[in-house]
Image (cartoon, rainbow, N blue to C red; front, side, top):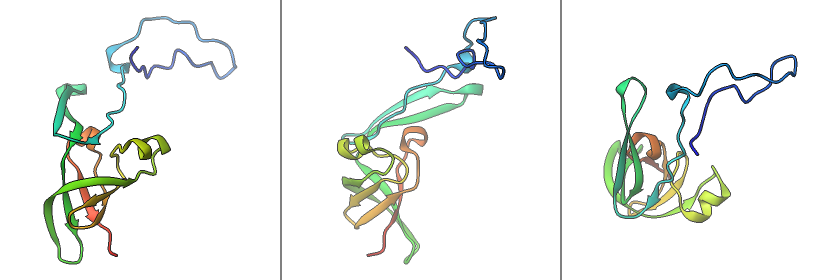
Length: 128
């Protein structure tokens, strides 16, 4: 069953039930979240509205880590995920989302990109 973003399942402002006057439309179709994990690189492309292409990262090995003190950005290997505030389940399973704290060879970093939607992991070093 796919995700549907229509509003026919909701009730009217007067608390009455809505009657369906048409079927589901393709522009109302959604998708399940992409749960990026640390593993061998695996990507998936999907067509978005207007013909735009969305790259989804299913698994990733490296991240682009920026250091604000030196102003440099390096591509480094992700060793593990430390903390994910998005969900306790994601924290336990090691899923990378925006805001996840990861362990890299340079140190701990904070993910600033959305890997499931943008297809890349960008992070900023946390000063220790």
